[in-house]
Amino acid sequence: MTISFRSIRSSPASQPYAECCGIDLSKELSAKDIEIIRTGLLNHELLVFRNQNTLTPEKEVVFNKAFGWHDPNQTDYLFGFGAPGTEHKVSGGAQLPECPEVSVLGNVMLENYYGIKETQLIPVLGYTFSAWHADGLHDMHHGLPELTTMYNPIGWQTRGGGQTYFTSGVKALERLERDFVDELRNCVVAYMRSPNDEFPDESRRINSGPSYMTDDGTRRVGFGSDPHEASAGLRDFTLTHEHAIGGGRHPCIHRHPVTGQESLYVSPCKAVYLIDAMSGEIRHDIEETVELLSKALWPSAKKGVRYEHHWKEGDFVAWLNTLTLHSATDPVNIDGSRLLHRVRLSTPIAEECC
Image (tube, rainbow, N blue to C red; front, side):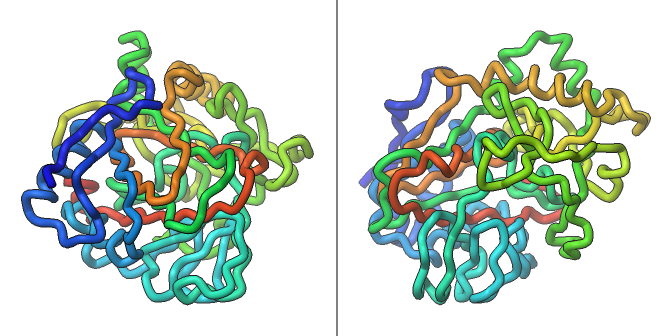
């Protein structure tokens, strides 16, 4: 079979995403296969592989390591889901004990799933809470993932809901006025501190509650009082400069080292303020930051512009985390059993991608 790419029927033409056809990811990938897929990822930012019916967790990891974008020395895989183990589970997810690079997400009870025993998965974040982000931006300092993959295994199919939204950070900048893009180039986001691979201590977690987002998931209006119920309203919490001490700091615009493309690279839910890229001084304070990040992202987050991926059994989706932003949808809208695998490996700190 020959690998080829075609447009995704359900994706707006304004997005660069594509389906990758003619490849079974459960088989050994040749050097030529890897190069073709690598080029496809760099050109399209996101690829959908359909009917991957015999894909194993080990093969998911093989795919993620095939392009050399991962840190070969990485041994811990926290990413908000806890250290490897059968009992440790955080934010409603869990990791496969025998393949800790793979996290599992969903709403089902796992009796004995690849070594995960008696674990109830609980979907927590979604479009109302958290919304648009790039993996690692709000909870990592270095080695942010270049590639993220998600897989819907055979035997798990929801009847409705549970979509994942995507929008190109490259195209997002093209929708903005030049002066505004120039301003974003001057800005670095100071994010809320949180536990992460470098600082796993739970004392770093700010007890704010989940970010409550409006305007198509681009504007934070406060913090939810109940992470499982959006209608519960907002918590009495005031975000201050102090909450950014020890948090990550990342530019609003990322320039890809291979393609040279600039992309909008922000996670509005956990942003505190914007600092000047040159002086390090606060350039836009907390409320201004909320407004600016929403203004930057909203034109690309709207229905009809974003790509809404409706998961089917055997779907394997891979995207460049530095070039495209994503969001889960609200768990309350999921109809039926849901189980997804996710892999996102750190990049070498010195390279931040290759």
